[in-house]
Length: 198
Image (cartoon, rainbow, N blue to C red; front, side):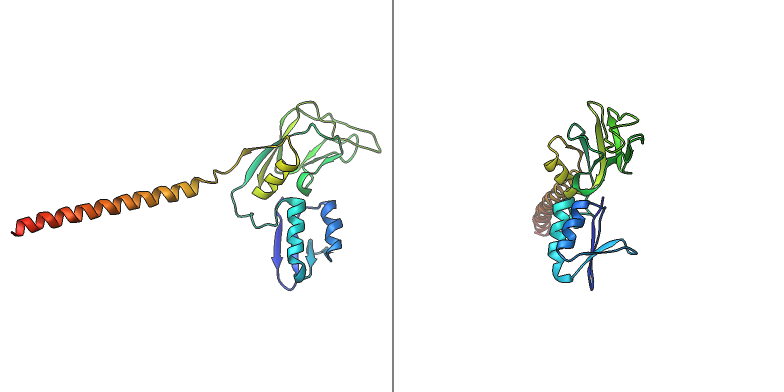
């Protein structure tokens, strides 16, 4: 589900297909480069492209190097043929008689889907009561967008964001304590050495 933005002679946006992104990208001058599979924008539209990515996907790629987040989503909302929070299709059924399919980073953790759902003209997911999916390895911004937009979603495995900062603080304190002790030892040695010389 990663979004990647590369800035050169054009601003290139690589992102999962999302109808809402396509519609708005065209309105800010974007065009799709099929061979490269990226959306291209004039460099002057870089901020607009970044804002659009955040609006649709929850991320403009600037958080791709941050620790990933896992969320769980109860599918008790609208019954549609595809579930597409934050732009990307996570689960879908293309045809009435086709089993539900999952994106690679999505697993079923509770409930299930029937082998068929909806009608020929309008296939649907038709999840059983209590069906829950787990979405893994999300950029933090995307996970936050889904939990904000989809009220019943919850973060179940977030990186301990403060662990690194806490470890750094602990090391600073330990270093300061050791430095203070070294100062005490030096003073004591100087005092003892002075007495010995006298």
